[in-house]
Length: 202
Image (cartoon, rainbow, N blue to C red):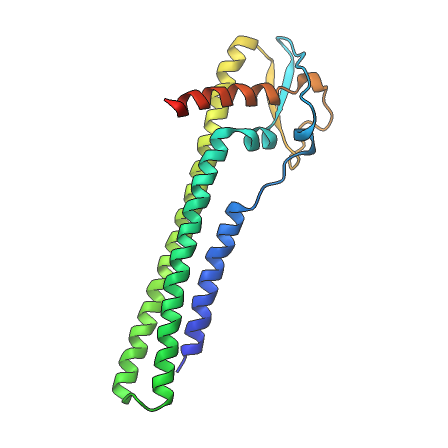
């Protein structure tokens, strides 16, 4: 009988989903610069300006709302899978108990074991499907946020006529040293949030 391996694999699947949920809900570190007072933008037409994209995304209300909704969904998925996993584990232990006491014929034991193995496979498939769905939704979320930012920046630059708008972050460091007056992050955050709040309130 390989029932102990069934239980271990159930625990492993639930743990994998829990790890995904923790990844979604763990706070992402913001740049130290995000806590600094906003610098007045002194950029003029023709300048090359930059936005700190990690700070921008983390302070964007649209991102916060979408991420909160995804985190809630991920938590519900984890809770549901944990409940199903506990039920399956309980059924496996009950089967082992009956088998060890000699309360089942060999034929009945084989049928029950086959049924439990099928349920375990279905559980693993469901857990994997839910994990893929959550990962896909996170990708779509990020794409939606980045598309909204890019679309706004294109419109914003029609008015300001900058030579280029660069993005930088703690990870990429495209702008290692830059004039704070060319950092338009806070202005973009405020404008994006104002637009988003109006749309959300409609």
